[in-house]
Length: 142
Image (cartoon, rainbow, N blue to C red):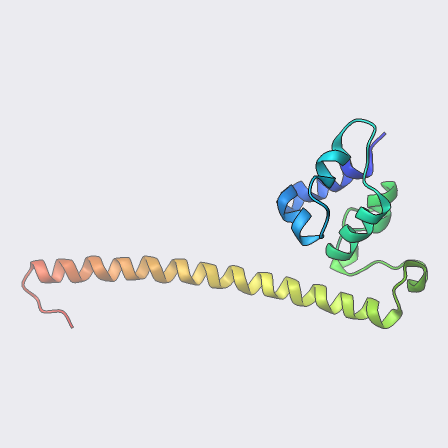
């Protein structure tokens, strides 16, 4: 039978995370994930709550019971029952959805910036090579 830690490991691999990063981001005790992976062990409810608060796109029912999809619908928090059942008010759930959208936008923009920096670096190198060629041929560069 698949354990919660096994399902969480699938999410970690899917997102390209590692245990150190997860421990830091979810504010887990050091060694929690490693201990949970041992035979006969699993994630505690306290650890699961910390993980779910940190990784909002992770589907609670999937992590706990293996039901449904790994990710919540469209990156938003799934609150199929009443939000208060999970200790989350409707307004807070809406704000969490907005935070997820903003985080996704930030990630997208950060990746674009990284690509532009790489392109600029390549163009700077090309300009340097062209200047060198011009200088070698006695043409003054500006």
